[in-house]
Image (tube, rainbow, N blue to C red):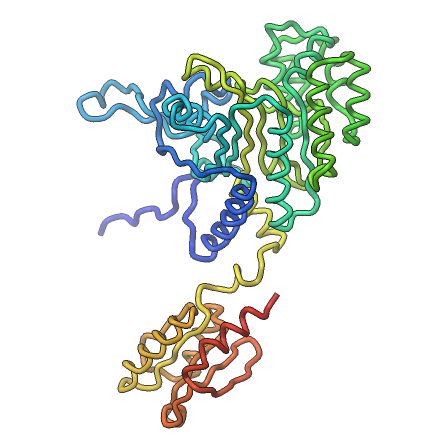
Length: 445
């Protein structure tokens, strides 16, 4: 007998059962509706790209996490890769803009909800295959772009039921100014930012060790961490403190403009200017941002301005700014906090039709069709069985209503509808059954 094969999916990936898919579709639908309400249009790109499209776009750490695809056929033995799985949705967007520049509007606003792949170490809420939910706005350098992106993201989180999140906001230009003021050489800025990006994960002591391992002088490290670390305060106070350190600076003026625009929206109360936010990706050129939730390692999403990235493909720079929400992390947190509405967790079927006996199977199918025409999600128990067993099955699938047509109901042209939640049972004309169930379901909050 052959050995039993492993049935687990590859590490860092998952199978999605029906309840999980319903939760995912609910979150995606909320995200899509909010993004479209801000004028963003849909876009999709292939799961894999030419490897040269991806390499060199994500910095030292990112390059190591790209899933490479080996050449195929007669070139397989070379061990070389010519393709790679999509690492994010931003670089593919930059390629698309360069490819279709004459077909896209001057100010192109797109959203994209697709899976990406990273050869990362799996952890709670961190997977090797996961969906990103991106919005990007291209064509303008105005602070209004960042303000709209952050307002849209905050709207999404609010509609999903999040109440305790904040948005950390910083600027790559400010990071550079603080590093220079700390006495860290320009040639070491990249290493410093990689280490600083881990501050919320490994703490101040861990960052100090990373700085030291990368050869950054200890006195510069101490000064830098004094600038970067600190309590989260209101944005106005943070900007005032930072002005005292680096003086009047273009990056601070940009952050101030974003904060003032957001003050007119519901998102304004969520914004915190945080000089410790680094965002490790090397293509960011301006404002950077990240959503933080208490008791969650890492973030629910992040983004920033990347005015130079599209120029790598197009030959001229195009202003661009984007934000990416992590779908899996949203779902993990929402599931743990029981944030999903009852109808999402309530199952896939509104009503199940029972089969009284084998002779009445055709009538059960006919009744199911009538109920479906009334807009209900209907299942039919596939065998003639004791009603108790059929009720038990309906309960196990979290079906709210059960339809019963016995000899008495049939003679009167009625159907008995049993509410599995309350236990109440009501007989009514068959033509009214679908409307009764629909009305009951719609009246629930």
